[in-house]
Image (tube, rainbow, N blue to C red; front, side, top):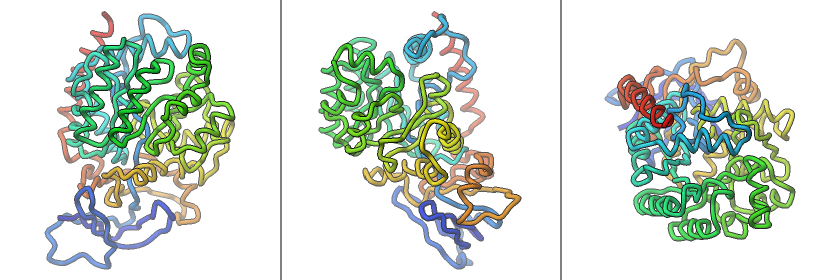
Length: 423
């Protein structure tokens, strides 16, 4: 079985070369593409006419939070946060404590749908639900599988709710890694004890994985680390062995000194930038100077599921606080594919595509594509989405699940979640 894209203008995501061709998209996690001159006359496979459309590799998110999906429109916290620590305490840690299996499923389904409709066919997620840990990752995985979006998951292990909860996080992680590829998640240095950190690194070694952790998102993380461990955050993580894994993802990395950046630059680890979340939380600005630009990718940090939006934000914010140009912001946008490929994670192959109905008023070609990507192309131009050779979005509508039913389910679960948060 295959899908044929007729009369396509294919844009190579690496070289930005434009090719006028028809494409055979083979199904399956290891499926690929075939560029053909004509479609077999006797084919019974689906044929999509892409005349006037642009076809390119679909998108991927380097850092998401499924658990935040039902937060949109919720009431104000019991206490108005005075700083980032209180934002965590009174908003996100209040929310994640109130999650149950149904609200986790609703969050995952709606996130997967939003991702798909924005052309995102692979999501790296960082999950937390301290009083509904058991089986939570599998719930998310099955929801993403149902919609047809690839995923790399982890549970956010932390000591902030006590050692028993930390142990449950470690146990959930190991149970999941026995069945599926994943990462070993940690919240942040300031909520992770030495014992938990050591166990997480050992778990990563055991399953040939890597760590996924928030790093110096706020100055509080550094201040706490210096006070309690007499080290800066990256120094502590490096000594614990976190940076030696090529699968390790360091989220944010805003408040790093030169020696910390050098440790990250010389390591196998990857950095994920989340500009809009940083702006929303007023924690600072990402600055890539001193880091390895080839190991910087982009995420949404649970703010939304639109990676084109994240790429543009990285560029615009970076004009005043970072060293970033047209090729630089696009490379960060696409580096997540390189992370997945380098570490042999399946599901992000060539048969993951978007068809863009981009009604440009000016000429578009290989030489000016980046200008169009920054100032013209938006997620509203995503018409069809193919994930692992399967058509999961056709004419802007999800084909794999009943979106209306899922949205009703999520609204019901959102109301219940908000009520639990009031108690």
